[in-house]
Every structure is written in structure tokens, then in C-alpha cells.
Image (cartoon, rainbow, N blue to C red; front, side):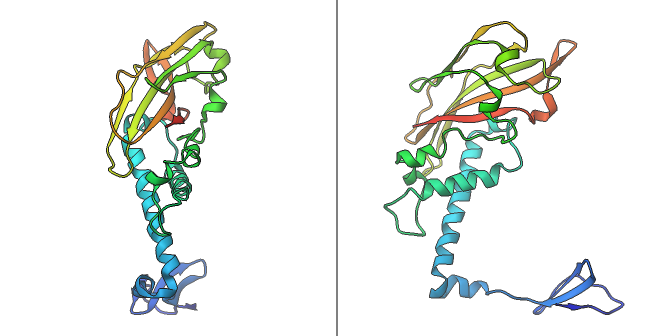
Amino acid sequence: MAKLKSLIKIEGTLDDLTFYKGKEGYLVRRKGGVNRDRINNDPAFIRTRENGTEFGHSATAGKILRRAIVPLLSSAKDNTIVARLVKVMSLVKNEDTTSVRGQRKVHIGLTTNEGKAYFKGFDFNSKATLSSVLLTEFALDTATGQIDITGVIPNQNVVAPPGATHVSFTAGFLNLDFETEESELILSPKVNTPINGSSSNVTLTPVSVPQGTGNQFYFLQLEFFQEINSVQYQLNNGTYNVLTIIEIL
């Protein structure tokens, strides 16, 4: 690395030199690293190529899941969701014990109980996890996707953010095939209730059962609202909303 002493201050790359601005002023350094052609063809970099291929597959699998649940994800996520999903997909992919290294797949990993276990309890918003927000039990019927929350008292069983006056519950039932990328998401009608001391039974029934040959994912979502003059507004653009995979088959 060297300092650039010139009246002309430039940034960018010229031949094998890179010019950039650092804390000590304008600097220049020679381009380093291994060139792409060598990485792609040199036998010494076979592990690098295998790792790169599998990382790309995991990233694609994360994108497939996110796209399949846009109606749910649009109001309950954080800025770490992409990286966290890639990590989970990579762990699931590792459970593929039949494919050679570099060609392991998420959909094969999901044929194992170990692979499915990485998804169960996954929170799409790490700032609002289901276990920290919903302080009561619920029951899931995997045949229909129905979720029952019996005797819920919102101001006792739901940890609501400041300013919230209402909470909505939604169930999601997804069939997703990571190999073909085909998916169908079915939602339940929302159950909206004021955050008070009244006890009620919340029943969330998806309007139908999704079709397909992939895996079945079951979601529970909680959304918070503030009511002003009889109109409910999404609280802080969904920062406190919950979306969690509660089961996968």
C-alpha cells in the first residue's frame, strides 16, 4: 500500500492498481488475490468451487421460501432475514447424505427429521420472537393447518409493544417444493382482538389445504395495531410483528 501524492485525486482501478480514499488520504495498492479463471479451473481450488456452488444453492433456497410467503413476510421481518435463512438452508443441505460434496441439496436434506428440525421455531423477525411475545399454549392440526389458542387474555398472554391497542392472529399453511420451486400458500382469516383483559378462544383455520408434492410448512403470525378514531394502523411499520414456522412435515 502506498500514498498517492498528486494534484489529481482518483478512485478506481487502473490495470493492476487500485486507487481509493482511506483514513490517511488517497492510497494505491496492487490488485491481489487469485484470479477467477484459476479458481474456476485449478484442481487446487476444487473445495472452493464446491463450497461456492452449495452456498449459491442455499441462497437460492432462501429466496424461494421468502417469495412463497410474501403475504406473510411483508409485515414481519428484519434486516437479517436473508443471512439467517441462508444459514438455515446450509444446515438443512448438510443433511443430504446421498449427494456428493458440492451437489448437496436442500430438498433432499428435508427428507430427514434432522433437516426439518432446523426450520421448526424459525422466527422471521428476530426482534419479535413467538416465544417471547405469545405467553400461552396453542394447538395445531397438521391435516387442516388450523391453530387453536384457547382462553387467551391479550393483556396477560401477549407481550404487546407500547402504543398497541389491538393484535391480529393469522395462520399460514404452505406447500413448497424446493426442487421444482412450486408452492401454494393458504391463509386463515385474521382474528383481530383488542388488547384488554377479556378471555377468548382464537381459532385460525386456513380456507383450504394447499396442494403439491413438497413439504408442508405451518406459520403463526401476530400483528400489532394502534386504533385512532376507529381506524387501526400498523404499529411502527411492523417492527414488532411476529412470524414463526411452528411446524414442518
